[in-house]
Image (cartoon, rainbow, N blue to C red; front, side):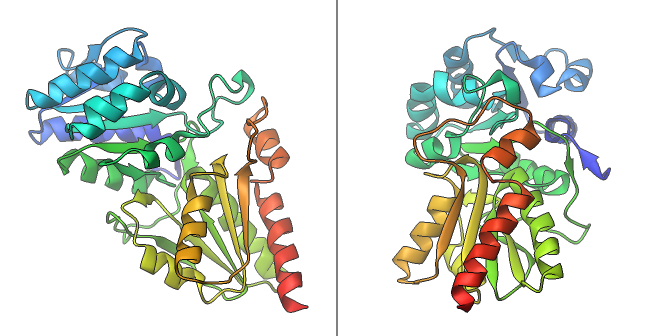
Length: 316
């Protein structure tokens, strides 16, 4: 796998390999073939793709029907339209009825940048966590993405996979093995725990390296598996540290920050927590990725500033 790869490309490669090994997989798109980068699949299997047009509710209902008919249905369209426009259908047709549909939320977070809040998806994890009976994943690298997809296609039941809209560098070597529920400790430290999901894991990796140069020892903890999540392992990874900073291109409510807060509170663990994301009651700004992350302090520089503040407070 290359050093940097678009996760939608990883998704399509996984689909092609799945059909080649005998899985009865049918992608469903909502006039989103370019968003899904699915042309290679169409060329190989022109009769397997269903395009319902710009009709996300129909997209989800069609996928549910295909699953009831014995197919492995996968939806491939932009996360903001999938989650918002087809909210009731996801809740009822997919989750409540436990249909074997894999929902791919493409270009999640603020991937669409200047197109602003109509095209941003900074509440998708919060919404999906509110639904029952669906597994939720947010891969941070191409290798992890591929392993999550391979697992999801074999798993029987609803799955939501949040995919970033930009090419991501590789974080994992060939020894990495994803498992549902597992957290991924990329670096162990004792001063501050940096916890993130999806593409913002790259921000905390960079932040930890710079903090180490200042003498601040940071743990780097990725949470690719939101549901299920091994909360005992997450707590164990955090507890050696004196403070926690969570980072996500998502609202601070309902995502990885909320998950960490719940874990700490339920364990009665009084470790200071700073949640970085889109602030409560706000939308992400309309700007390119670097500007957006800088404004909302979810880039490496913002993480470093907050980690440094917490470290000084704990040392005083």
